[in-house]
Image (cartoon, rainbow, N blue to C red; front, side, top):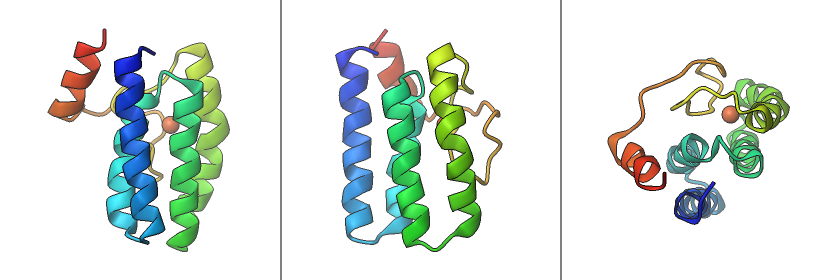
Length: 115
Ligand SMILES: [Fe+2]
């Protein structure tokens, strides 16, 4: 992962964490999903996005999301290490962990410009 993509992931994780601190869960998840989309190729950032989502799910008392994130933390880490992950997937438990999804246009531009 190059520095431009890394900076974009860090920005989304930071925004997500700030919204978590403010207990604005919906906005937090929005940014954490974006961090997940951008960070999947990195075991570190992929796992970080799921850990933050786990934290958000706990604050939100969303048991389904907690369970989903507990599954996604190890599988996401391994997927990133072996280079197998569904492009565009948001990382939430309301979507299959293996389903590719269309990339938001602005994130596609970030990814394209970082290659
Ligand atoms: Fe994931």
